[in-house]
Length: 341
Image (tube, rainbow, N blue to C red; front, top):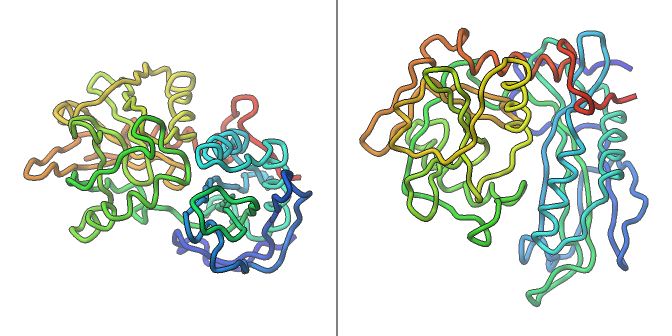
């Protein structure tokens, strides 16, 4: 094993081609055994269902190198379950959970030289995805599917260290696909691109989505969930039927309760109460959790005083604790860490 000679500290959140990727094919009602490939290219017909009707889902997780040199990944079983849930929403055959975990481990093992060194601030991003493969012109689900996993070394999602982010609230909203159910992993991102670009074009890091029915309740951003900290140090997270069921948020809630002894409340959060919170954080696989300094709600400025000293914030304690668990510095709850052997 020899770690690749890259300038890990300057790595952005972008695609770098690694040596191997995994592929399995679904045909005639069953998945094949799957295998590792060296070719990063996918060849398909112009009428492939994914190109015509966007029948595709994806997941995202990371692999890390611990202080003692082990390579681990974080809660892939939950990614497998969420991807199966997403697949069922789009009438796709779920990839079996045990095979998903096995494929993740096999792909990371094959690309272990690309796992950044401990302490570099970088990680190996793992992207499982599935799509309709055969030619479909009528509006109907595909009959064949490809399940693949690619990996790429990445740096921080927000290239700011722990500098507070700036968000805006625009009128560009989006609803869940069926108007009632959760937006699944891999289904919500395309619907958030317009709002994301709106925010970036005006100098903001992200756009805050509100509920599609009344625009009065906080939901999420295009790529992250919200956590708020009250003035008496309670963690509050929005409850909604149309936000992504984040694995990172679920993990941070557990960390807040069991590691930091904090009270946690999941409830509807109204835009009008944002100014009452001490801190605001965005959480997800890519960012873990990043502090938010201010939100511009049209002509109204909302500041979070806890962001003035982010190194002393509850958000930072949550970040340090969860990344400590992921990196092997803090003992993890049972079943959270999968070692790549």
